[in-house]
Length: 299
Image (cartoon, rainbow, N blue to C red; front, side, top):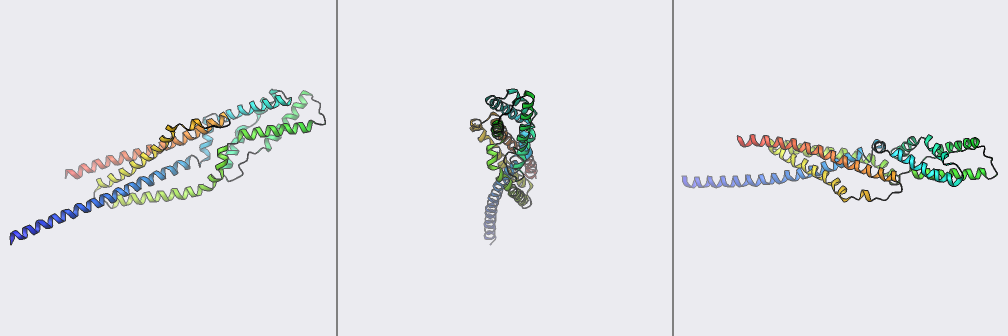
């Protein structure tokens, strides 16, 4: 009887061990899936944060312009094109150089950029430019003692309109004009999506942390989630940079080309900053995992 009871007890122990191992595997799979979703949510959250501080930020593009001499390049290009126009129209080239030198190109560009982020009309404002150009022409005529004819008003109006077209072409940013309204309308949606992703990340982190009995397992799955997000965030800009397609873009002016390249290089740089933050979090979580794992195995 004792032998039968002993065999029955051993069989129950084997079944209990089997169920325990089976349950452990299921938990491991479940937490691995949670770690995957955490990595995915953190990746999307990082993308939203980068977009918020770059494409959806007026300060970002203005800072890009200032740090890469965009204003100076636009002014130089405007002067060159205005000189060609004045030369063909009978004015001295010095007239164009002096006018562009005194014109506040920085304020004009800043107002144009501000319109993207306020929902206003994104057309270049030309009223101030025309007023100042007419005033400069009047001073030029008086200084040179030029006698006006019956056609003078028509010729001056034609000259001002041609100069204004050059000005608009030089100030406007084609690819921004096309997405301006989308940026303004999508900002509210971006805020909602970012907040939702942050809540989802906190929920997943809470589930992993508070439903795991052993601390080293908590930190292991959190480490896997943050590492997966780090790799995804780092790989995205790397692929785009290695493709070298940015430098092959064809734009109308050198200033616009430099702005485009520096703008998106800065965007990718922000991705690397966020990937660095995720990497730092991963290192901390891995350190905690190793510490608690050693404590658990030494007991």
